[in-house]
Length: 257
Image 1 (tube, one colour):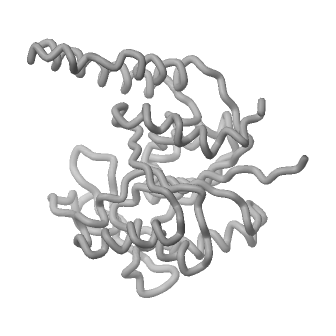
Image 2: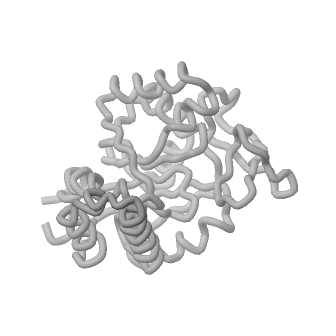
């Protein structure tokens, strides 16, 4: 029986941290997890709070699923990240396992005045993050650069035109695009694009644009019936709950299913 390939759209990819947890993992993810686990145990010992070390069954599930199980899926990845120097090495790494289409562009937010714009990309000290918005922390103006910004529907229609995806392609949306998340959700809502679910972090909408914009983002996701799940690749505390979420949507696309 023919079936469409799952598409994972990753907006604000940075170093592809979340994708490499779900589809890897590689050595770096092992290091991230071990450091987190050691810190958790030491903190519990210092505070004599041994209940905090509990949940060994949960952590064994995390280790077994992400590091021991061997899984492969019939999927392709669309990465959108304006900082090429950060993303490119990890795009190449994931490309060894899955087809990856990488676009070195920023996704425009809800306040964009045109479908495509040139935007200043701001950087921050001691961080790989970049944003087309100034946040409430000092920027490193020497690192600032100009990038192309595109609305999400422009990207989607372009992928269809180039034959990368088809209309009606099932897609999972992973995003943490530093304040532009509302723009992505609005484009999906206006154009009838319904992601299977949305994972990542949308907190920057509230931080940068205010609570009203954050509430609108959550309202639109609810109206689209697109469940949202918080997940960060550099925070192993979020990895356990993501197992059931990921399996719920990706399992039908497993190559051994």
